[in-house]
Structure formats: structure tokens, C-alpha cells
Image (cartoon, rainbow over all chains, first blue to last red; front, side):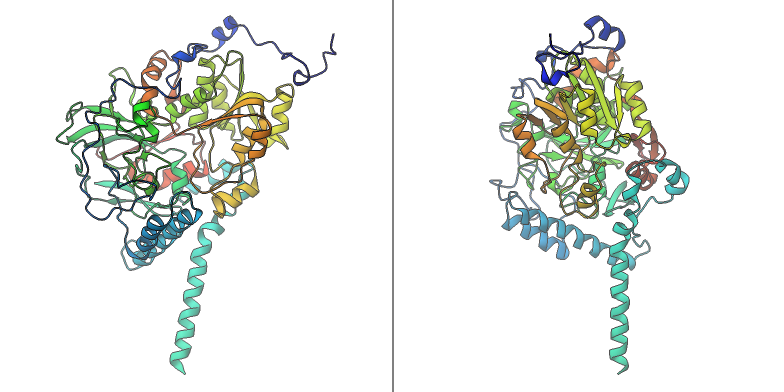
Length: 193
Length: 382
């Protein structure tokens, strides 16, 4: 007889018995109704649905109103695609290059797309400052007052990195503002000479 | 129409946008009556998903009423109340023909590694989403389903992703009778995964999180034991102790790329974007499961590499199973479970915001203020 103090991992069987089916059924609504894997919709992984609703072998092609950017791992632009936010400006150039030059398997593809995202945001922020609705570093912040910003975070370990959020979010804005001030000062000095 | 619009990381607002139009004969235009913010929307909101364009409307959890149909639509009519799976899929490609609806090859020109998703950046196809008054729904004969009369709208909207993903996550775990199942994350997906683990015969379900209101929900909604990782120096060691040093038979990772619990991962991932996201939960899953066990991953990760402990997974002989959920495939069986009260998705809802207040909703959900577990969005045209 093995010493009962030795944990399950070091002997053949689990030492803690599982509660009986009746016990579990009494405690948990529906316990075991999907016990048979055949009742689980994603078992087995590959299934051949009789009717998906599709009444085509290959879907009719959606009209392509501009050369739609696509992964070079695709044989062609898929027959259906999203048309939201076509590529524009410098961010559009970067994005189109990322798609045309690098496959999804290349890190450069994704890093260029991330760079495109930051350029896109900067382009729109700059434009927004000339509009009636300028962008701000972050939105929804009034809920810090109305929805218990401090109370909600009390005792939470993630509050430690929450204090970094303002730095991460506002940092690039402050850096851009600083650079702009320095640039203007330099230009003013150059003009004053 | 009014729609949520992305302006850059941490910045969204509501704007007037042109109404969506039928662009393909099998499109429908749906007037959104109820939408939700998903935890994975926060990855977009935080600027972590490549090719998220300014002007994009997020939202892949929504239900609504059919306003217009394209010329080839046969299965839907104007006025039908529909629930729309978050996957956009054609129903006829190699993958759809095998039931892999979330891996459809005919809907996303931007990437082959992921299918089409509403309102989830151009990396998943460049479709505007449903956090708006109206939305374009491609392949209307394939994806949407009429909402059964008996079903509550709030259950219906959760079945379009969060609840279906929880149920799918439990299936990926290949749970056998009596298994000890650990669910990482007591958010919307984790809560339903814990409920579902019991349906599949688990003998013990332990849910790990650090937010008290979520752990409480795991106990009351999913009858689970709970483990607050803030109370332990090393959650993996605690899991080993609680499982008699075996580790769990199955771990379901229902957290994804913004996992807390490790400051270095948080800094390198969500904050500084030096890696695709924080792999903390995934690493806890790999280290917390027993040798020869199964890790099911339904937490969302982007395409940029992460610091994952793959060597441990190899040396432990793990089975790693994962996918985006093929939602429609889950529905017939899930509808029975919801009708019988075995799954109770709407119990997780904590907040309801009008569309005009969606910037506030994102901040509350993202920072987990005010006990927020799941926020719904009520469009003004509803």
C-alpha cells in the first residue's frame, strides 16, 4: 500500500474520487447532456454539411471598384470583400506596398501594416485639428468620474500598469507637440536672423 | 446613419456615415437592433490589430431586422428578425464544405490565415461592423438565421460570438467524464466555457481570474470553483497544488492577447506593441495543464509573433486545439441548451449603453470599471 500522502501525480490513479453522476446532475443544471462527443457540434472537426444555404459552386464576383489590395498568398481577389476605408494618402501607399511585396508569412508585411496604421492615425489627427471636431488623446475618460475609476481599481494588480496608460496614450501626442514647438521656435529664429 | 468610428488607438467616436448598400447579389442590409462589444474589440481599440483603418466601424456581435436584400437572396425577406454569426462565410469553398465556416477562403482578400469577420479591421476583410444603425451582411443565404420566437434578444446577440465561442472552447478541450477543467478568464467567453464544461461531463471546473465580480459570476452562473491569481505568487504552482500535482486535464484559455498577470508581457505586448500581445494566459495554460493534457485556445491573438513557451508544450506532450469559432455550426445544439436553461448567456450582461455613448462604453469595458463584464449597445434606429 502506497503512502496516501503521496500526491496523485506520483502514483497510478487520481486519489480524489470524482463525484458521482447523480451528485453532479443534482448540483449542475444539464450536467453531462453533451457527454457523448457525437452530441457536440464541432465533433469531429471536419464535417460535410448537407446544406449551407449556398446555391452556387463558386460565388458570383462582387464588382471591384478599385484595385483591391490582397494577400499574395491568394490566387486572386476573393469574390466577396469589404469595401470600407479604401487605402488613401501616405498610409495607403505603405499598406499597398505591404500587401504587394510581402506574404503573410513575413514579419515585414505586418510591421508595415502597423506602421501604416500609425501614419493613418497621424494623418487624420492633423486633419482633425483643422476641423470643428479635433481628435483628443483618448475618449470616454469622463467615465473615470461617473463610473468609479478609483473605486473599480482598488486592490487590482493590473492597476500597476494602468498608471502607464496615460504615458503610452498621451506620450506620442506630447512628443509631437514638443517637436512642433521646437520646430516653430527654430523657424522663427531663422526668420529673425 | 449613426455609427461608431475608430479614430486611432484609444479614440473612437460616433459619426454620420453613408448607409451601406448592396454590393453583391447575395448581400442583405440589416438594421441593427442590438449589438455588443466583444473583448476582442478591445484589441482593435488599443491599436493591436494590424491594418485597422481610421474610419472603421467595429462590431461583430449584433442582431437586427432585414431592411433590403440583393437579387439572389432566397432564404431571407425584408422584415425578418435575424441573428448574424460573427463569421462572414460563403458556404461553398473547400473549408466551408467541411464545416470550417470561420476559415472561409472566399471572403477575405487581405489574408488567407483568417476568414472574414464583421468590423474587425482589414486583416479580416475590411467589412464595417454592427456597432452602427445599419450593416451590410454578405452571403445572406448562408450566415444569418431568423431569431426563434422563444429566444430573448439578449441571448440571441450573445450567441453570435461570446456564448458560441465559450461552448466551442469547451468542445476543443475534448473533455472526458470526470476531467478537471481549468478555465482561464471569467469574462463572457470563459463563463460560458465553464458552464459548457459541465455539460460535457467535467468532474471539476476551476475558473481563474482576478476581478472579484467576475469570479463571483463564475461561482453563481457556472457553479465553478474559483481561483484569484492576485492572491498567489505563482498561479501555476497553485494549480498544481489544487490538482494533486498532476495539473488540469484540460485548460481552456479564454483570455487572449491582453492578458494581465505579468507586467513584462503587458508592457511588451498591449502597451509597447513589441510583440503581438501578452501571452501570459497561454503560457499559464501550457504550464498549468497536466502532461498529455489538452489546451483549448479561444482567446484571440493577432498575426504578430508572441513569446509563447512552446518547448514546454512539446516536452509535456500536449494537444493544442484552437480556432475562431464556426458559430453557425454551434447553434442548433446551443439553442436547445439555452431553451432548457443549461446555458444562460444573458446572465453575464452588466451594462447597456446607447450607441451615442459608445466611447464611454469602450473605456468602461476596457478598464473594467463599475464591475463591467459585458456591455450591450443600443443603436438609435432600433
